[in-house]
Structures are given as C-alpha cells and as structure tokens.
Length: 313
Image (cartoon, rainbow, N blue to C red; front, side, top):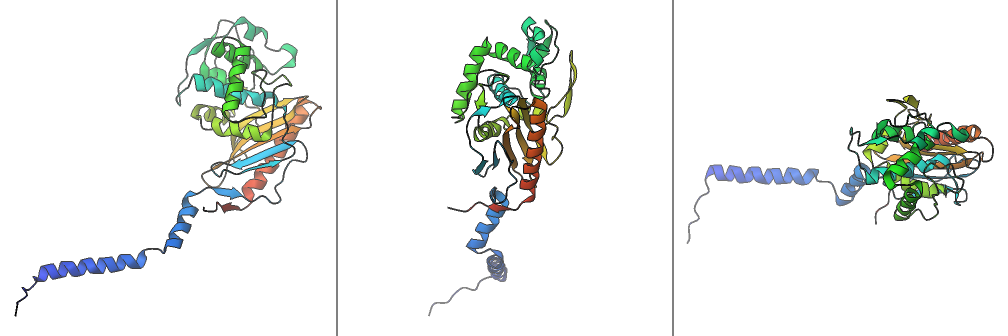
C-alpha cells in the first residue's frame, strides 16, 4: 500500500484561507441581471418622457438630452428666419479653422474701415470699433456672441475667408456636414431673412458648438470687458437661471424671437433646445421677450419632470 505524504500545517492553513475567501466573494457577487441594472443607472443617459411637455404656444421648438440620441420636436419643422442664431455657425466655422485652447487669445485681427463704418448703421446690432485697432480672435468672438454684433460677424468672415460671400459658402458646407438639411445661410450675422433653419437643425449645431471649450466658455459669460470697446453684456438674460449655460439669442421683425439654449440637469448631461419664430412680424424686442419666456417655461418643465433610462438592445 502506497503511503501519502503528509501536508505541512502552514500549507493546509493557506489553502483553507483561499477557499474561505472564494466562498465570501461568491456571496457578494451580484446576479447578472442586477449588474446590468446597476450599469444602466450609473452610466447610460436618461431619456425625456414625452408627455405634457410645456411647449411654446406658437412657432416651433426642439429639445434633446445630450447623449440620449432622442430628439423631440414641436410645431412644423419648416425653415424660418433665425436672425442672430446664425452667429453660432459663424463662431463654429471660425473656431474650426482657427482653433483656440482654453485661455488662449489667438491671433490679433485688424479692425478694418468697413467694420468701423457699419457701427450703428440701419439699426442693426453692432458695437463701436476703431479702424486700425488690433483685437484678438477671442475678443472678437466675445463681441460676436455676447452683444451679437453684426459688424463683427462680417469682419470675422472677411478675415477668415477673404469675403463674406466666401465665408457664407463655408457656413453652408459646415451645415451640410452636420446634416442640417433644412438650413440655408446667406450672411454671417443673420440679418438677412433668407438665412433660415429649423429648430431640429439648430440642435445639430448646438451639440457640436458646445463641444468646443472656448465657445462653451464664451456663451456662458454674462458680461465681459473688451479693450477698446468696454463692457458688453450677453443678450441671453436666462444665463445663471434655470441651469442655463448658453447659447445664443436672435431677433428681427421677420424672424420674431429665437433662442438656442443649453441647460444643466441634475445629472451629467446637458439639455439642449431651440425655440424659434416667437411673435414673428412684431418687433425684435417683443419677439425676444417671448422667446426667452417660452424657453424658460420649457426648460423648467423639462428639468422638473422624471426621465427614464434608455432601454437595452
């Protein structure tokens, strides 16, 4: 009969400890279905429940929760004048061609006589600038996006592409690349009523614009001081309320009031929305007030409502 050598006490103790550890680990491992539920709760974006949304009573609107892949729309999504919402695309094209890092001012751009002459012309939204002054790219983007200066939009267009016409062609190519099939740009500032879009299309631009750190920082700024110009205020008076962190206003008589907005939720994702064609054919001031009020009601309603997790599969 073969004899079996004895196992040393220390080895037996170590093996026993390992077996005990394995047993304890098995007790705390979640079942497969529970692990799946936990992952959805922690990482997947939620979805907006689409009942009883406080949509505007006129015009058109669209909303999305960033990362959800869900877009909800209201009203006929037909192209309408968008006024200064066009400046979001102007900034996007400029920053795509001349990117800035956070905190970077960028190249200095000379203010030409045309930009100075256009200040205050025809009642447009403009800022007073001095020909020959050299302002940084970031400073000009502040003047473009906060007080919504049309003369700065055209100045940036000439600097970037040589002429406004050439720049508008770049805007249109960018819109095509973003899938904005119902959008037409005919000027850099949006004063032309032939610059048109839909709320759903503007959301496509908003998603990309808010991925640019410099643009995101500027549109969240309530006011700024630009050398040679002075203190300028953001026309988006919702900033700092209802979680709003951007984006851009636009108003003319043909367009009515428009607002492209971004607002924080309680989670990690942004709510993005567009409200267009509010009180069209009244006055720019009346239209803008209506767009701001309709947007605030929509944002507050969406932030207060429950959201469901995205389904698997």
